[in-house]
Image (tube, rainbow, N blue to C red; front, top):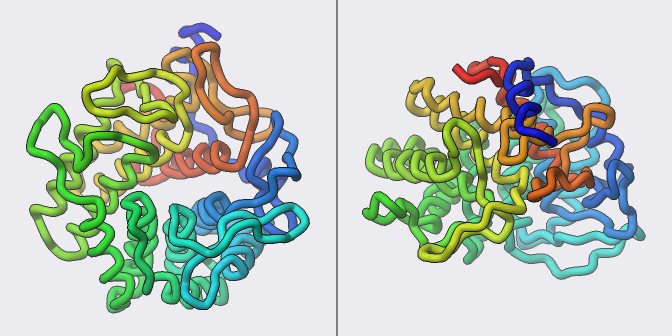
Length: 352
C-alpha cells in the first residue's frame, strides 16, 4: 500500500462507528478475544479485558440500537460472573465456560471497573446502570500494585463521579490511581513518571488529568496535561501519528517503529478528548483527528487499518502493512476512536 492512499484517506469523512464485527465476535457468553481475518477463533475463548472494553464502547452510545444494548447486557453479565466476593476478577474463560485462572487485580480488574463505571454513568438502560454500579462499588474497594491497572480503574471511577459526585469509593479510587501513576520527571526530554513507556500510555496521563479535575488540584491537572502533550508530540511525524510499538520503549535505547497497535491510538484519542473537555482548548482536537486519520491511512505505511466489508479493525501495523486479523481489541480501539470523531470535535480526517 502506498503513501498516496494515506493522503486520499485524509480527504474522506470519518465513518461512523460500526458494531457489526463486534456483534460477530459476541455470543451469549461474552466477546471472543481473537479472530483469523474476520472469523472468531473459539479455541482462544474470552477475556475480561476485552469484554470490559466492549462495555465501555457500547455504553458510550447515546442512543443505542437494540442490538447494541443487547451487547451491553451480555458484557455486563460476563463481568458480574467474573467478579468474586472480594471485588477481584477472573480474566480468562475458555470456550467451554471454564475459568482458567484465579481472580486477581491485574489490568483486567482495572478495565472491568472502567467498563462498569462507564455503564453505571452512561448506559441508557436504568437496570444496567444500577447493576453496573453495584459491581463497580464492590471492585472499587480493592487496589492493584500495577500502575496501568490503577489507571484503568481510575477512568471508571471518573465516569462514576460524573453521575454520582458523592460516591466516596470512586473518589478515593481516582485519587489513588493518580498516586499510582506518579508525577512526571522534570526533564523536558522525558516528561514521564517512569523510564519506560509500555502500552496504552495515554491512559496514565488521562487519569492524572481527571484526578486533578476531581480534586480541583491545578498542579496535578497540569502534570497530566504535560505528560499527555509530551507523549503526543513524541508520537508525531509531521502531522501524522507514528505510535509506539507493542514492545514499548525504554529510555536511552533505540526506538522501534513496528508493530504499532490500535490500542495506542484509541488511548490517545480518549486522552485528548478528556484534555479538550477539561481545558476548553480545541487544539487537543488535533490529537483526535490524527487518531482517526491513523485508522484511515494517515500512518507510517499509508495503510487503511480497518476492513470496510466487515467493520473490523486490523490487529496491528507492520512494516509491510496491516496484520489482517480482526480481533476484539483492535476492533474496539477502532470503534472507540471513531466515537470521538463524531463528537463535539466533529470533523473529517482532513488536515487543517
